[in-house]
Length: 375
Image (cartoon, rainbow, N blue to C red; front, side, top):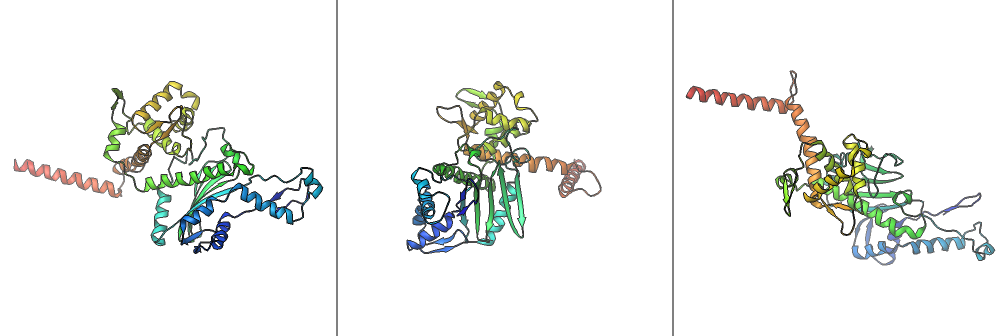
């Protein structure tokens, strides 16, 4: 606890929830092995989880008041009797999830693959991964996805306003995902301590959503059926719905936007999709008319990519929608365009794909010529 030495004599309390949980686990007689400020193993994970869940705003307030009663500070006994006292607000809150791996070396390789596969999740060059709020041209701050390699430990950072998600391979044993909220107003939540449960929900949900995107992208299950459902016309309850053509710029922009919109905890509305879609199409959001947005929402809904939240005008991205969006955008960006570029690459040293294609073409010509001779 630190006190300011000048008016208004503010104080700062630093409270480490991991160390609190370790102390409480030791007090309860639960055997565990620490991983720095986390847990490597635990004999009773269920009891440990209850300890973590029971860390409430009331307990933090009681801890602070206990030390305020012992330490000298500017408010005298007379001041406190008159109603003057410190009120606790949240300057910074960190919510983390540590996933310990039984094969650390394989885990390190997996994590680096996760980083590689998710550099373009949500098109970070246009709109970085967001978690809980929409981004437009008036939103302050930088929105970006960064990969940092300090020493030999890679980490991925996703920034949103003054808050961020950080993910790294902790002590070569576990994948650590941390959401740090530096300003609760970034998410429309007040700063006073009683807002901790709301911030807790936002922080842990952001961790889970990021992991969900990574899990789906690392093990895609969409294939030919997903392609037909998305990229061909469908008939739903007698309504014929136009196809979302795979090679169309609008389709790719819609699918890229869905990856970002999946991260919003309360779903998304028409304006949220417009704010993401317009920059991807090189348009001003004002140029996207209400009728045009309604048309896109109808196509996405009837193709099964989104669902309307009952009794609202908001939508959420379905599991199929997320899988299809990730699969088809990666197929378009990583296979189609680079593949065609390789096939058409000129020069004396063509890439391997061009050489293989030339060999195939020559072999087909040879077979055709032989058939002509035989005839």
